[in-house]
Length: 583
View 1 (cartoon, rainbow, N blue to C red):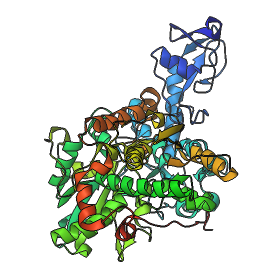
View 2 (cartoon, helix red, strand yellow):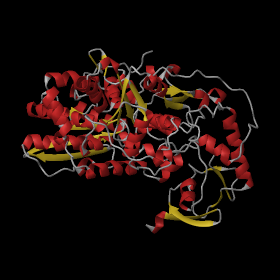
View 3 (tube, rainbow, N blue to C red):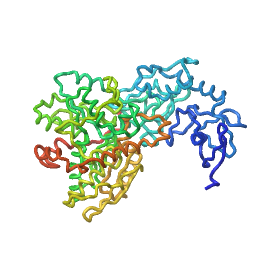
View 4 (cartoon, one colour):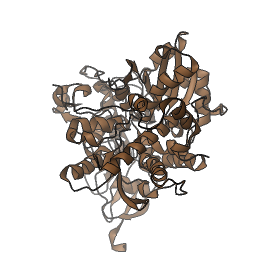
């Protein structure tokens, strides 16, 4: 409504905005760029860093544009000499207490502080002073915390608390002693961290990053006695290209496979095939539970950050978890059993590398439950970002690569496997198979739009063979808590629940390419990546997991049937109650 609009002037431009709009938002609408550091749209809007200061005519001092509301008739100046100098001083002071080792930093060339330093032509620190040396926390299998590079923007704190509902990180102490830390300044490995990695996605510098393990992969690739197999998750192929300047959501499957072959892997397999096995086992498990009304609702177990969350916070609900391993763990177990036997390779000589969008997979792969016959299903997990670094280290011009296909005999996957990378995808893939099994028919209904979309919680009632199945798909751990509280209180009447730790699902995982706050405020990254996966599904000639010919062959030759003794030994696991704090 017109009465909800106000008019103001920003850098001599008249602009109309809704009442309640901040100056920063109004400037963006006017096409005026104001620099920020601590600001993260809808997550961290606290005005801590002061990089976004502006002048308002008739008022003394500077206003912090990310929190200052626009007012009727306000005249704002964003680039006066005084404003520019003040920002430069603020930036210099931030850099003066920042460990400057850009050549070695994992975030070099993708660091918001570095970008601003270049923009403001800061070539040297004008105000050098005392710096406190902090120990680097690298005890966890997933995350490294280096406070020496922290700029106290609090974006990680806000993400962990407000988005994920965990609160593993907080700003403690005052003044020069202020820092972002954990309970008792303990390692993230020893507090209530789920290793989802959303803090890494929010961090503007290298203060938080994944625990890199690519050197171990290079060593194995050089070892002639080791047979190195790599598998890639669905979400990786629609994000990897971003690390090479390609558009967000570009499907680079063929180029990715070619790059992996050039790097030197003995076999390049598709984790989507593992996802098809997950669906077969999970759909079978759900049907049995549904018929017997046993530990209903059944909750998916593909997301290791989510699994760690329920183990720490709702151990009484663990019987509701599916016993299925996640796709890459299932696939790793099959590579070291079925594939090894078929190819005549000693399983102990096979080294399985998983390329994942998720840093919690680094934690998952080293769980003792993820072993068969004393061999780990997966030996190393690298992120999408780590794969990009390997490709660059190999001096491969990624954008000019030809397309090649995954290797046989385990290379074929379905569209159902591809959509595992989006929230609601596991649910939809499972329903495609469950409906055919329950009805005994090859039904034409493929898409279940009810569980698609950006909403953090999506509820639906699906009718299959005359029976109503109430389902819910949730992404983000704050939303997971909402669903678990409903189940715990007895208010929920769901039969099937999908939960992903990362908002939006694996496409927005902690190991995916990191986007600046500016890009995140202007582009719907989640939608672009999700659309790419749905496009892969739509174009697949097989879109139901149970119709995958590779899967059928392996069941006939080796596993017998879903839920068999061997299938349980290889493809299923157990979970346990965990302490939130080991202090």
